[in-house]
Image 1: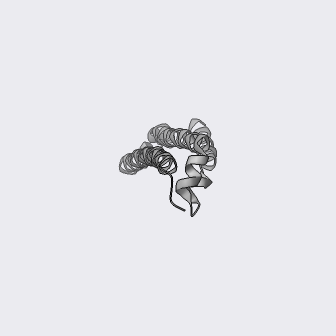
Image 2 (image 1 turned 90 degrees about the horizontal axis):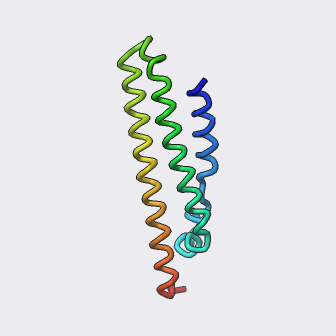
Image 3 (image 1 turned 60 degrees about the vertical axis):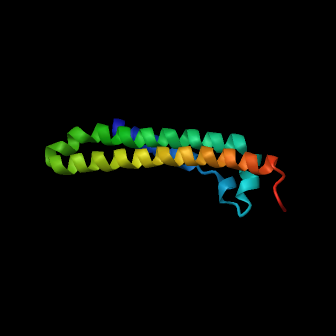
Length: 109
């Protein structure tokens, strides 16, 4: 049941973590304009990463009864995915800072 709740939390957080400003062709200007939205999206990505790793930890004993190798592989890949999500959070926050510097420097048209 814990794994199911974490799956739902991770999925909802993944949907809420979408930041449309960084997908715009003028993303450097748009990201600076929607700074709070970018920060909230990064927060939801952190929640998603934690939920996905937590789900793998919750399922490890259950999967271990069937195949210890598969359970360990699932856990390892989920931890790797969580780490990559956190790297994405850092990149998103760095993009926000670059965008703010771009706008404050008098961005060319």
